[in-house]
Amino acid sequence: MSTLILLSPIVVVLIAAIYFFIAVRKRDQKNMIKKQIMASGDRGEDKVRAVIGSLEGPKSKYQVYHNIRLGPDPEHTNEYDTVVVGPNGIFHIETKNYGGERGGIIDIDSKDNWILHKKSGYSKMITNPIGQVDSHEYRLRGFLMKVVGVKNLPTQGIIVLSCDNITLRQNQKKKLEVPILGRHELVDYIKNYRQGNVVIYPRTIKKICRKIESMNKMAKAN
Image 1 (cartoon, rainbow, N blue to C red):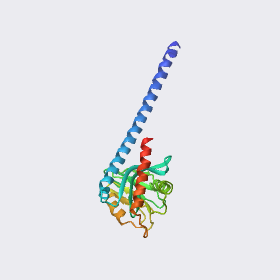
Image 2: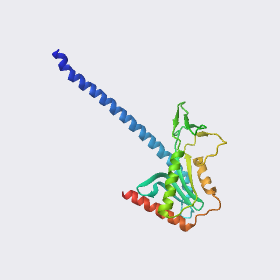
Image 3: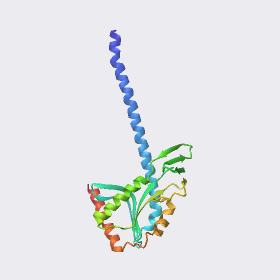
Image 4: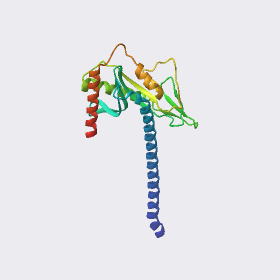
């Protein structure tokens, strides 16, 4: 009996140590997955930066911003992968590196569910990014109205699939309000975009850009 009493604290300590080890291992695995996802996202954004670079330059009509925050005030902002301001519109771009480097297939079903089929044979449901783009659209319009003091300007959200080996399958009869493009389609889409006869004049573009830069200076300061 005394032996059992002496051993029981040791057993309790061992069990606690095992549980602690398992918990730490699970935490480390989750952190590793998060880092891999972030690294994959960064690679995707770098690919988009490479193709959209043709819109940048001193003689360009467009201004391009990456990884910025916008909203109606500094307390209510969203983070944007890329924002392009030009005479034919203001474009906010959400980059998705689904499939990584190897690629795969994305199916969008009749209920707007997104299913990713990897080349390894593994399939999984992924979050429909259109909700995220809609949120960005809402914040952008709030920024334009309350910070810049303009409204009724053409704005357009875009989802860009940065992996060149990804195939998108969807119902062709259903028109998407948010275009889903490959990265090499992006620049032509922006240049050819028209929303009626609306034109954003250079002075308005400059004002928008000043406010974008000012809001992000404040964000960095905080």
